[in-house]
Amino acid sequence: MKTGLRPALVTGGALRIGAAIVRRLAQDRRPVIIHYRQSSAAAQALCTEIVDAGGQAWTLGADLSDEPQLSGLMGRALAMAPDLGLLINSASNFQPDSPARPDADQWRLAMAVNALAPARLAADLHARTDGGVVVNLLDQKLANPNPDYFSYTASKAALAEATRMQAMAFAPRTRLIAIAPGLTLPSGDQTLEEHAAAATLNLLARATSAEDLAEAVAFAATGAIATGETLYVDSGQHLVPQARDVMFLVRGEV
Image (cartoon, rainbow, N blue to C red):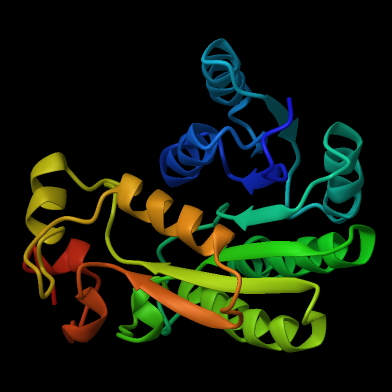
């Protein structure tokens, strides 16, 4: 199927924000490779949904923290879609931890999945194709930091700098753009009521949806000028100083 839009690889594309991005790209009739780690059933269901609607999709399983699997991922993706030209780094490791108790294993996992894997895949796309676009998902916390989710935040900061450096190194053939979401979906043990309260703690007093983020990704993927930039999609959350993660703020935890 020829659409004029080169195929995309979406890491973590089977669930949550990744799935919303996959659906949004498929709306444009862009072929999509849905990467997953354990959610094979969800990935296949989403793939079937897209194909049944007249689109083109594949599923691709890999553990991004495993070196051999990461090394082979781009080659497997290119075997499915040789004209691959868009990489969305959406997969993320998000575990609670504290600056008071840095854990070596947790830091290695966060850095592997959230920083090294996106950078490696971006480098592989640039090296093995005629260039394209890479969209990295960051977090509004980088502009509005607090100590919660310590290793996660540090790994996203590493990815932010990697985005800038690779944008310089890979220009003009490959563009890199970062999207920085705010609170979007419930996570961890957060209840729906807690999420509803936390989601409006921003300048616009409105929740930011997964579909909002997906629309921003689609916009970033088709622009031709910007590279090395970060677009905040958070209803202004990054401009509201918060001493703790909003999950804990609505619980009154200090």
